[in-house]
Image (cartoon, rainbow over all chains, first blue to last red; front, side, top):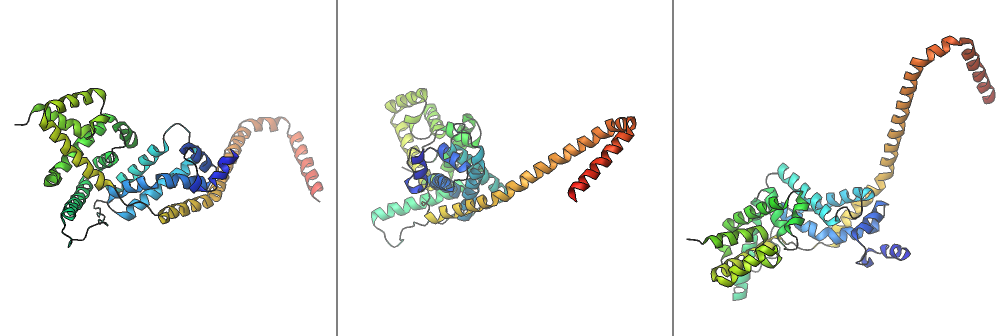
Length: 198
Length: 141
């Protein structure tokens, strides 16, 4: 236990075997360093999801910050083993994204930071340019989807979550998630049209 | 005209994603049979995989810098520093509202029970009050 305390003083060196439940228990007693490990572990995927959902950097930053503040407040009452922290965080973040999207109707898409030089016309560069345009078009199309379809397709995008996991995050059933994904994919396929030719 | 099996396969791809290896057993075996028998099914799968790759890239974003995480931890520090005062306020209101409820209950009880008690032995009550008051003042002086 003393070893765990020592390791938590330096969040960078916190061992992988420290579970989120261990860290939440520490955070529940006001241990900021333990909470910093949680933030480091979960920040990137939450920010990516919020950014692609909202299309606006500042909105995504706010959503992620609010999510972690909610986690800090929930830490004293956190029951280990009751729910996965990642699922809980995604649920809070998605609910905030959906609530905000209802309040703010128009979302500004994020500019694509990694656009290639349009003067470079080598064959590889042509393919890359085509792909970059397709990705940008896909981002725009995702931003046009209804909020829950958008949430479902973004959660499914990296292939790392089952439909059951997505249902847990969205607080719905697996069947409902499948319907959201079917509608989202159909809409996107139509919107992307020629971009989808193999 | 599109074959029924192609429509059903596309529907399954939309529901379950373009990696049949992760599908439930029954659907995966059905997909494997279709893929073995029909070249067009394989083409539908390739198209769905390209689509999922595109969505995956569209859903990705640049990684966070340490400044972003630092901002969150600053906010958490503010939360933490604000907590003692909030806790004090919460405790104050709990205790004061508890005391108010107890006083109210005591008042109701006295209102119902005490007139009978005091009217039965008024001199004892007044005498006890007076001596207690005198003792109290004496101790204070």
